[in-house]
Structures are given as C-alpha cells and as structure tokens.
Amino acid sequence: MITLFRKKLSPSSIRELSEIFDTCIQHLESSTDSDWSELGVKEIIKLVHKSKKILAKGKAPSMSSINYLFMPTGPLQETAMQNGWVDEYLALAGKVDSIVEKI
Image 1 (cartoon, rainbow, N blue to C red):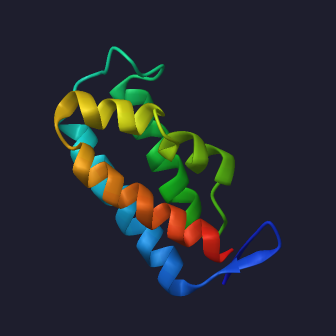
Image 2 (image 1 turned 45 degrees about the horizontal axis):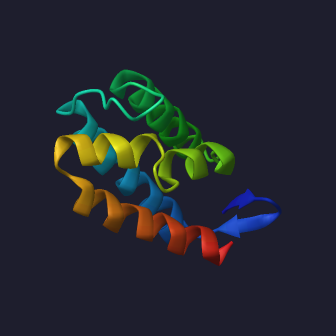
Image 3 (image 1 turned 180 degrees about the vertical axis):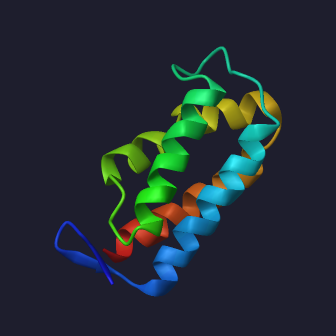
C-alpha cells in the first residue's frame, strides 16, 4: 500500500486514481487551451502524467497537485468546459473526492 499523509491508499484506490488520470489524459489530448485556465493543455497533461508516474512507482502523488487540478474552476474544469467534456470531468472529480475522503 502507498501511504499519503500517513494514511494508506488501498490497491483499489491506486488503480482507480490511475484510471482517472488515463481518462483525463485521453480527453486532454483532443482538447484546446481554455481562455480561463491558467495552464495550457500541454502543462496540464504534464502534471497528470507526473502524478500517474509517481503512483506507478509505488509512491503517493502530491495531493496538493491533485487538488489543484481537480478543484472547482481549476485547470481541468476550465479546460473541460471549453472543450465539451465537463460532465465527464465532474464525474471524475467526484471519484477523486471520494478517494481523498477515504484517506
């Protein structure tokens, strides 16, 4: 298990976070920059990839980075709204919230 803030992520939470990151990357790869996001699509993809790679190495990704990406009106939401996948984003953000609540 991976520890995060001295709490452990279960294997199912690790798998779910990885799947969420993959889904975000898939959406982002066909997205354009949002006028409202302080990060461009390429920068967001880099942050998501970084978190995914850290998770794949058996380490906990930075929760501050994850919280930043998934916060309301954060880079992912603004990009999702600009590119027509906001409903999918909201579902993914809800899953992230559920995982974070468990730890």
